[in-house]
Length: 345
Image 1: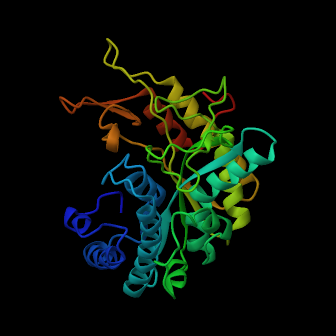
Image 2 (image 1 turned 135 degrees about the horizontal axis):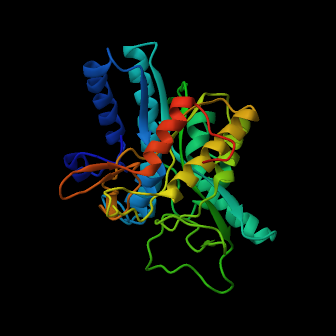
């Protein structure tokens, strides 16, 4: 599932409604019935945080709803759908390998103050632990539930849900793009009730941009050490599972030059640094089984449309002509020799 709920199900309430998880399990059975003889490894849900808190909380992405309580229910039902999908696939094929793909972040406080440390705890809780703990540990983090008490009483959680949600996965897929650096709310500055936030219960936490840290065309800080940190944290805090980086990449202002070529040294540097971050994690004992760059082609980036280019291959959206960027050729060389050279070129 990659953010593509059929409209009739959204019309019935969408992911905040429990029945949507059951419909997803039916869909999984149908897909396996068609592809199960060719596909062994399955990812159930892609980036549940974005679906829940950007789709139903802030309304940045489809379906564009702004309802914090609905977003919390949505997240629960997505994880329930994941657990039901694991069961469905295992019943159909005991050899099926199944996992979920959350988008995880390294989270750091902007200072050594207790207030900033609590801000980091809150954002880490919503961005990472709120999704990982139920699926991998079979429980919600108590501090995050307490943070969300003004938003939700969690009455949507039924007996047996956490057991279903934590059905034994065979791997965890991770999408990583950047780090969050956060600070406590400014003194005397309450959250603006008129602004929808993807951070329910922590709406007035400040996200800090560090001076001198390079950013992508999305405005996201480039922080390869955050990838190593994230991998080490998952390997340390959760049951042992093979890990895969299923999305990692960057948008830049790519232009076809007068020779019909696209040179993107920034993307080459980004990928090089993040592959080295993966190698550092592997050297520290993280069971990382694979890495996938996002993305092969420039593509439709949801609410941003065609304005941001993540691809290794440039797409002229008018003619559909494909032009491999210099990053594509670099990445091909790395893949062929299964390694980076000492200079990182």
